Every structure is written in C-alpha cells, then in structure tokens.
Image (tube, rainbow over all chains, first blue to last red; front, side, top):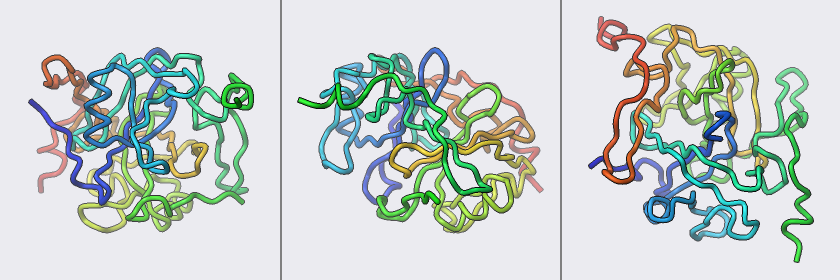
Amino acid sequence: MLKLDFSKSPDGLIPAIAQDYKTNEILMLAYINEESWNETLKSGAATYWSRSRKKLWKKGESSGHVQEVKAIFFDCDNDTVIFKVNQIGGAACHEGYKSCFFRQYNPKTREVSVIGERVFDPAKVYNN
Amino acid sequence: MLKLDFSKSPDGLIPAIAQDYKTNEILMLAYINEESWNETLKSGAATYWSRSRKKLWKKGESSGHVQEVKAIFFDCDNDTVIFKVNQIGGAACHEGYKSCFFRQYNPKTREVSVIGERVFDPAKVYNN
C-alpha cells in the first residue's frame, strides 16, 4: 500500500493537478491534505483543502461544477498527484474559464494576454 | 506588468508545472522562487528551486536534459505557472521516465502500477 508524502511542505499540503481526462488540458492546481485525499477517494469527486478558507473544499460545492475523478497518478516522489477529471459544467475556473491557466505570459513585455475560452459568466453562477 | 505572488506559501515557493508543449503530457512539477523565475526568463531554460538541496536548480544541469521553455501560463491567482517545454533527451524524470507521473494509483487496491514509458536507464546517465 503506497502512501502520499505530506511531510515535505511546511503546511502539510501537496499539490493536486486537475487535468481534463480527454484532452489533457491542465484545468487547475489546488492543494490536498490527508483529509481531502481520503474524501476524494471515498466520494470519487476531487476534494481539495482551501488555503484561504482553511477548510475542506469539494470542488463545485457551490457552483455544481464538480470534478469526477477518472484516474489518479502519483509522481516519483509521492508528493504530487494528478487527478484526471471529467469537469462537470465544462469550466474549472471560478472566473468562468475552462482552465484557470487562461492567460499567457509574454517574457518580453512582462504582460499577460487572455488566451483561454470563457464558458460561463461568473456573476450568473455564483450570485444569489 | 504582472507579477507572480510568492507570498501565499510559507516557504515562498510556488509550483511550476512542466508540460510537453506538443502533446500536453504533464512531465513534472517542481517549485520556483523569485530567483529561479528570473533565471528561467533570462535563460529560456526551466530553472527551479530544489527544496532538498536548497539551491537554484537548472533542470538538466547534470543530465543535459534541459527544458526549453516555449510558453508560460499563469493561473487566475498568479500563484502557479505552467511551463510548456521542449524536453531535451525526451525524459523529465530522474528515474528515466518521460514523465514523473509514470505510476497510476488504483483507489480500490491502494497500489500503484507503472504505466509510463522509460526512455533511459538512470544508472547510465547519472553515474560517473
């Protein structure tokens, strides 16, 4: 039985990369602790640890845009995982883009430009 | 001019995901601080911060398997980057695999199985 190594980071968190299971597009990176790892395994839906809210964070709990985990990969050091997911709703980013990595950085100008695809208007999804 | 936010992690490091610029395969995840970020921009070769050696780490400095950075993406919080790279030598992992994520985790058995492609024998590359 192989275990993830949560000991290397000062805060006991390791990164989890959510990747589209069909296209291999990287959707987002968030963090997991042991509790969220176990919850992900139990529920089959990607569950992270929110560093800002300091609590368990089932992705999509407010938007309905959950991530069904289709496959899990460990890196060689057992301190990073990939969740290959089916992103319900088509957008992982709370700003409405398919991927959180929707901006490309230009090393010459030191500016970013939006290259990603916007799937929804966040105001309509998150407002009450 | 947009800046990365190195302040959220207790150790001042943010994750950088190296992704094959042609196939979108995730090759590895390592960490950068401001110094390694600047060095990456200057040299055009992915340069990380080694948490174990506590020093700047130009990927491939010992093996010759450097990563030419073809494009850079920021996430929505400016605290994670993707380096889309051309991996010289074809393998990012020090264990000789194309990707460090060469093992798939089976949630039922809690075991991993090797699914990745081995490109070189590490003993031949790193031994003196």
